[in-house]
Length: 471
Ligand SMILES: NC(=O)c1ccc[n+]([C@@H]2O[C@H](COP(=O)([O-])OP(=O)(O)OC[C@H]3O[C@@H](n4cnc5c(N)ncnc54)[C@H](O)[C@@H]3O)[C@@H](O)[C@H]2O)c1
Ligand SMILES: O=c1ccn([C@@H]2O[C@H](COP(=O)(O)OP(=O)(O)O[C@H]3O[C@H](CO)[C@@H](O)[C@H](O)[C@H]3O)[C@@H](O)[C@H]2O)c(=O)[nH]1
Image (cartoon, rainbow, N blue to C red; front, side, top):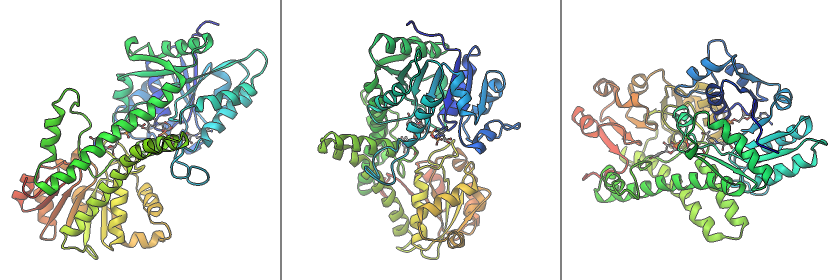
């Protein structure tokens, strides 16, 4: 068999990865028909909405969808038809951390991957290249292959590839247009290598060939977990140093700048923060921890686990700083929380540190007002209800209000906590905010966002992560 020329792609899963990734493939490859399918009717309807009110917010995404939708990009709930028509199928479904059973709290829940694979096996009538796009534990492709091969019809075959996605939310379109690398893992058999070439040819429509890396299946799967673990480790390292800065009077910005000048370290991903969030880092490290333990490598497991432990410590440390600074009690006090998304330029709140902070403030019986420019109100209530199990939502709503703007959120409050690095928070009229706040007015910058000296000149008492009082 020679590499097939791919003409029809189906993507199972119209989420943060499947949607943008396959929309960009459709844009860059007008000769390929791309159909993104999902079981979630509301999500598919939003992707198809006439006014382009897409289910996810991502800068540049609407433009991509506007150009390709209806031309060679389609969204549908007809999963079976999508599978049957395609010669290449991306499996881009969610792989959350297991909540119960063996490996609960650590292992990836592969139920969605398995269901999608079983559906392909049940309905495919011709040969398919099946591409693992979801982030999965090492050797998941083997399970997929076993399921597919056990169900293949005479004359049809399934080739499995691993093609993990490295886009970051908020810059997804930029990342997809100019990826650092595209990684494709395959079996090193003639058929596996042919399938690999078929997928590489799709990306070669816009990605320079030297950036398309081809490796073995298991290396590809592990590289995805490894990349996220190393990135998260950098943040936990800088956050650990931020605690030392606060205690000594060193300044974490200056430290990051100084160490980032070493070309072996580099300047990126060294921004101290209230802690990393997002759907991937914690989940993927815990997955690596679970894998290490399963392989009887307890020291390796403990090493990676510490990255997550440090992140939890950083969030707790920040909440405690707020309480300590507000004269050791926030009971009955009014706090504005600016930002609820896990990072700027996304409406995604999965594992957002803001959720932990608000939960901590509510448990201290403070009143909290939240403003975020992109997060849906319904999502905020869902997240808070989940963070405070057993507390009825109507009780949460007695302590929490949602504001239509940053200035509104800050009015008549004792403190402002910056939880997400939205640019608009840097640019708000801080003098106007000060005029409307109760005095003394406190600002807690969990994202190294605002000019602390300028705010102090206005009259604020400012606490910044990673800066001691003597900095
Ligand atoms: N979010 C990111 O930035 C990012 C980046 C790289 C990799 N990843 C990985 O990509 C995968 C997907 O993540 P996501 O953020 O897009 O998740 P998501 O929850 O946004 O989307 C997954 C979608 O799959 C659908 N789905 C689940 N099972 C299905 C089935 N059997 N048939 C049809 N549709 C089904 C769900 O309804 C959902 O809409 C995960 O493994 C994640 O770790 C995510
Ligand atoms: O210097 C930094 C950089 C990031 N963060 C925080 O780290 C989290 C994750 O940020 P980022 O990595 O930019 O966003 P994600 O969308 O989670 O992307 C990560 O996770 C994806 C899912 O696996 C991968 O594809 C990406 O390559 C990887 O960067 C966010 O809370 C950020 O605020 C910091 O605190 N300091």
